[in-house]
Image (cartoon, rainbow, N blue to C red; front, side, top):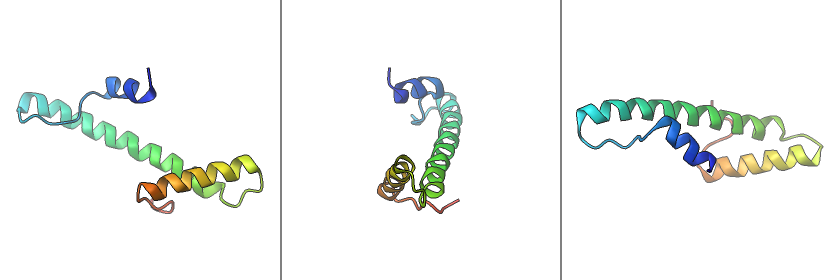
Length: 80
C-alpha cells in the first residue's frame, strides 16, 4: 500500500456529491486534508531553505530537490 492510498483511507473522500448528509463529512475531510498538505509543504519548504547553503552533498541535494519540487508546484520556498 502506498502512502497516498494509506492517507486517503484515513482522511476519507473530499469530493462533494451534492448531498448534504455526505458533503458535511467530506468538507471536514477536505479541511483535514488541506491542513495536512499545508504542514507537509511547510516541512518541504524548511528542507529547501535551511539546507540551501550547506556544504554537505546530501543536504545540498535535498535542498535542491525540495526547491525544485516547490517551483514545479508554483510555490515559493519563502512563503509562510
